[in-house]
Structure formats: C-alpha cells, structure tokens
Length: 359
Image (cartoon, rainbow, N blue to C red; front, side):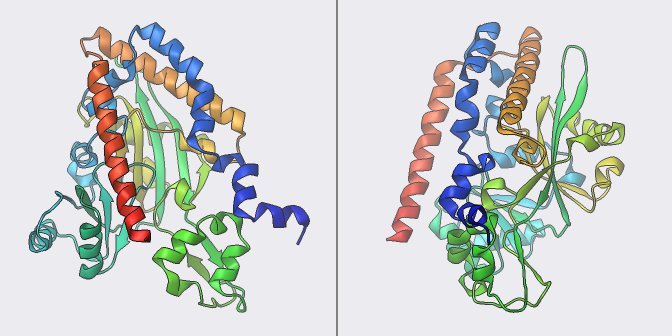
C-alpha cells in the first residue's frame, strides 16, 4: 500500500485532507459576508423565514418534522406516527398497530438534523430501550425497502412562477466487499469512508465486525442516507429534466406555503422521478436544505461547494422577499432567538443523555 493511501485511511488525516468531511463551519463561515448582504437587501435579519410561509421559521430545522411530513400528499407519505415523550409503551404499540407499522421500523426525533439519532429498530425490546433512553418526541416510520434514496432540491419564485430543480443527489450506502479472508473489521480499516464510522458500527453492531464475508459479498454498514453516517453523495444534478421537474413541481404545489426545499425520498428507481410512481417522501426540509450534491468530491471542489451554497441562499432571499411583498411577515428576531435557545437546550439535554450512557 502506498504511503499516501496509508495516511488517507487514518481517520484524522482522512477528515483533514478530504474537504467533503470538513465541519459545517468550513462551508458557512466564509459565506457570512454574503448572508449579511442578503440581510441588508431584505432589511431584516430573519428574511429567510418568509421563504416558506407554511413551515415554521421557513424550515430552518426548528420545526416539527412530523407536522411538515403531514403536509405531503398522503399517497407519497410513508406510514408514520408521532410518539410524544413519556407515552406508555402499551399505547405506543397500539399506535403502531393502528397506523399499520410493523417491525423493522425507523425511529427518529421530531426535531432533528443530519441523521441525528435515526435508528432502524427490529424488535419491541429495541424500541422500548430507544424510547426510554431519549425523553423526546419521536417519529416512528415504516421501514421502506426501496433500493434508491435521492435528495431533490426544488424552488419556485412566487412572483414570476419560475421554478426549477437546482440539486439532485443520489446516494450510495456505506458498505465493504469481502475477499473470503478478512473480517469486516479489517475491511473497514482498509476503507477510509468506512473507517470514519468504525466507532458507530462498533457500538450498534459489534457482532458484525468478526464476520468473514465471502469473496465478492457486499456487507452493508448503514441504512441512514446521511453523509455524516458514511453515505456517499453523488452529484446527479445533470440528470434533471422536464419529466423530473413536472413530478416534483406537482408534489411541491400540493404542500401549502412551500416554495423552497429538499425532498428526501425513497423510490424504486431513478426513473420514478419522471413517472411519479414508486415514490415515498421520507422527509421535507425547508430553508435549511443544503444542495447536498456539493459533497461529491469527484464532481466538484471546496470552492464550487461554497459557490453553490451562496447561489442557493440568494435563491432563498429572492423567494423570501417576493413573499414578503405579497404580505408574508418576517419572523421577529426575538422569537427566532428564543427558538434557537430552546434548540440549544434540547441539544444539551441529548448530549447529557449520551454522556451518561458512556459512563
């Protein structure tokens, strides 16, 4: 193995030398002057909150994911239910039965981001342990076995009606391929993207690490389509066409007060985006939506990523100002500040739970 390959497979150096793994600050701090300019143009700090009048704060990530999910047309929603914190487990099981959700299922916080606490649960004991560990509102969702997971970022200008697809991200879930000799642990250590996820895999699936896959056997190491969980993001924006725009536009126009955001969806094939069949939308994000295609280092650079983020914030600004001219108010600064303080308290509580678990 070459020296560079050995260096690049060490987690510290892999994160440092590959910009796709850099923290969010590296992508957003350089854009502060651009965001300030947009605030000046709108004459309001919270201009972005008017981009999606139908979503709290415009969809900055402070909203209830379940409430947003319910805005999606029913045929395109996975079976889901909201479990408020402290719900007796018997009532949880009754709600699952009433909703038609069976095991395995997906559990995730009603307030979450970047794959935060998303888990696939296979049994009732696993679900009971998850709900007991996290005293927060939880969404339980059917586990979809569709082979494709795709993120599609859509926008529509309310004054002109101009609309488009500005980002399409296809996803390749984390995996290793067996050679008939090495254990999964050894295979993980030979693959930088997998090595970065080793501690998570060790905590969630320790029994997997000692298995010796057959030559050519693919072992999947994650089911959460998030970059921070090891999923490879592939820039497929170039495949956007009129068929895809027609499908996504039809969906978007059925979501009240929605003009900008990313549909994270499962589907039977990429062509489902054109036909509109075999699609389930697992999440809808508003102004916090990143054009996730930027994290494909084979089709972009760090500087092109900054350019694309800046372009999308300019889009948000145009949409928000147009909505404001049509009567949508910007959120008061003190109310948004209060929402962020609540979020920080929520994050500290979760961090305390995690620290207590490790002791």
